[in-house]
Every structure is written in structure tokens, then in C-alpha cells.
Image (tube, rainbow, N blue to C red; front, side, top):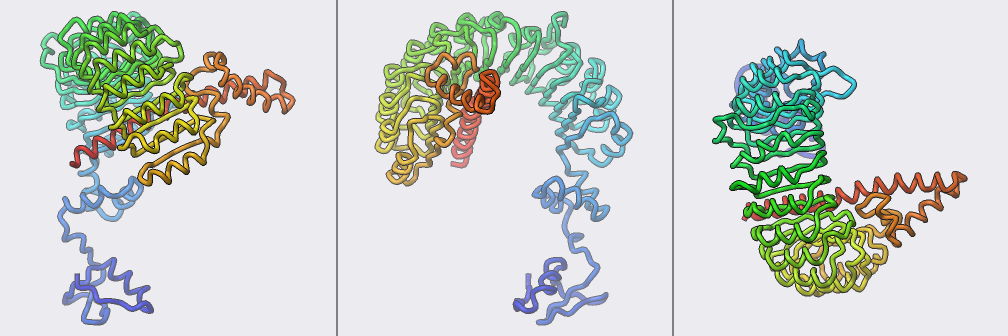
Length: 535
């Protein structure tokens, strides 16, 4: 831009002026000569030459705090920031009601809105929600958390004004089925619905379903979490032909009937998550009729067995991602996994937690599922060096491998030095016998392989992914738990104090273990998707 080079001795004041003021030669006004024929004019805002669109684009690269400060520079920056702020998150306490008018006069282009209120405060009411819906007609995504003062009537008025809504997420609110039905009736473009701890949905609640003319619904994703009577969503789930994703997590009651209703029709479901539910092989057999399923999570459903998994494998031949947390019930094992190996030849991602698989089933999966790229084996007492060596020999496409809480030694890790030629990431967690030396040796042998190990945390082995009552039966876990108890008794607290400490550590370890594999594979899958889209 024609800036003259400056010496080191002159850099302090001169460089500041060059950064703040454009070095354009002008005439008239108060000016300062910087030498070398460069003159700048003070008290002139050269950002005024930028169009509003360019200034707004610059603001998008700023954090929330910096953007707030920039909006206080001048009226123009305040206006540009407000007109181009599309995402807004508010502490939805009742105290802000009087400021809503001026707030949304400024931010009238908001499309994504989050209203959150803590448990100890009074939230915004129906009147405030109606005011927001009138001011923000372009809303496409709304999240409500802890807004306990909003009723069914308030949700109905909100739905009438926000007909462009595509995503709705509600949690810890007091409205019920009438409010949800009102959203389904008026928001024809709604694609994603997430409901968590909705207190108004109880045993006497009305059924939640599409309106009579709702055959052309655009709903693609439904997520139900921690509901007392989530079965009221049965008509909605069964009648929505455009539904692609269904997640049911920690909801009470029997869900076999709901899944049977899904399987009876021509379902387009491609992703199903079942976690901590009362679901049996009857429900899995119903899922098997959804032949388009590509992603299936069966997490901590103790009534599911090899029979149900076999039915799914035989009919859902498009399956690409399979997550199973057997909760160490030993009801899912080699028999079900052998069926997966025979029929699910497109499998790309497999996560086994608390499943006692052996060399027989893992060898079949490694041989038949030639597209397998991501594999996690966690909390299994039957997966040792032989199984790891088999995977290293036969899984040629494997790129990411996680081993956690399995009796694997240095010998098994050593097999990965020559096997799995496409492996780029290896995580070894809570395997006490694996040493740091073998990991360092593996890094030397395979320079491009990223290896992670946490052998410095021996007490964490006490809980791989199960509750305390479950892991006590395992000799390996009992030994680690005893070590914790000895530490507690050394303080004079007796066995009760030690067992209490062991219980706390175990539960914390269980939560950490559950999140590790899930978060790891979500990140890995996301990176893979980005890489594929870039190519």
C-alpha cells in the first residue's frame, strides 16, 4: 500500500501511525509528514471507505468480547454489528424482559437463538416469548433450556409467528404435548426436534403426532432424552416417512412397541441410537426391517442379545457404523458378531464396549469387512495379544484403532509394527501390561503413526466402562479396587471410607470411559468427512 520502510530506531511511533491510519497522500486538513513523501491525515476514519458487507465480514473473525467492544466504537459499527449478528444466546431471566424491545430492535436479523435460565431464577414468560417471535420472524433455530415459565399457550403463539423454524431443542421446560403439537402444526419446515426432560409430558399427556395434513412433513431427526412418558411420541415416530435419525436416550418405559411401529411401515431411517432403554430382541428385530439403517448404537440395553443383533445384521446390509456397549452382561458376543461379519460387508466403524469377543469373531470381521477403518475394543477380558495380532494381520484398511481396558501386552502392540499398513492413529488406554518402552519402539518403527498411551494411571483400570457393582466380579478390577481401599484405610477411615472413595473414583472413571471412545470416534469421523469433502 505504498508504506515506506522504517528503521529500527524509528519504529515505535511511526509503525503505530501506519497501522491506524491509511498512508494515502491527501491535501488539506491537519496532516503529519512521515518522511519519504508519505503524508497521513489525522482524525479520519478510513474504514468509512469500506462497504458495510466488508466490515461485517471482518467482524465475523472476532470473538464475542472483541465484537462487543467494536460495536461501541461508533454508531455505524454498532449498526453493522447488529444487522449481521445472526446468532444470539441470552440468559433468559425474567429481569431482562424490559430490555427485549431495544435488544431485538438492534439484533433484528437473528436466525439462531438460545434462551437459557438457571434453576434458581425465574425465566422469561409467554409474553416475552411472543415478543421475541414478533421481532425475529427469520428464526430458523431455537434452543430453550430451563424456561419453566413458558406454557403450552406460549409455545403455540411462538409457533404461529416463527413458521420458518427448522430446528427446535427444548430441555427442562414445563410445557407439554400440546406445545410440541403446536410446533409441529405451524412449523412446516421443521427438520430437527430434540426434547429433553420435558416435565409437561407425563402419563396423562396427549399423543404427539403430525397434523392431519402433515403427510408432507420435513422432519428428519428426532432426539428424546430422559422422558418419563416418551411413548407419547410413538405416532410421530411411526408416521414420519421423512425421518432419517432417531435417538432415544435414558427414557423410561418399554420401547419395543414403539420400535415395532417403526418397522411395520416403509421407514427411511438411516441412523438409530438406543441408550439405557428397556429394549429387547423384539425391538431389535423390528429395527431389522428398516433396511436403510447405516448407523446403529446399542448402548447399555441389557435385554438385547445375540438373537436380536443377528436379525439386524442379516437384514441391514448397508450398516456402516455399529456401536455396542454390552454392559458386561455377556448377552452379545461371538454369535452376534459373526453374523455382522457375514452380512455387513460395508462396515467402516465398529465400537465394542464390555463385549467379550474372541479371536473367532474378530478374525471373521477382519477378513470379511474389508472397508473397516475405525475400530475400538474396550473393557473386554477376552481380547488379548492373539486378537490384536489377528487384527494387525487382516485389517488392511484400518486407520484408527483404540484399545482400552483389555488384557493386551507388549506382544500384541508389537504386532502392529508390521500390520495395518494404513494405520495413522493408535490409542492404548488403561492396559496395565503395556509399557512405555514398546510404545516408543513402535513410534520408531512407524514414523507416521500417532500413538497415545496412559499407562501412568494404574488406578483408572478399576473401571473401564461399568458400574461398581458390575466390575467387582472381575478379578482384575477387584484388585485395583482393593488398592484404592487400602489407600483409604490408611487414613484411619476404615474399610467404609476406603470403599466409599473407591466408589466415587469408579463412577468418575465410568463416566470418563464412556465419553472417551464416543468423543474420539466422533472427532475421527468428523475429520474423515472433512477430508473426503475436501477431495
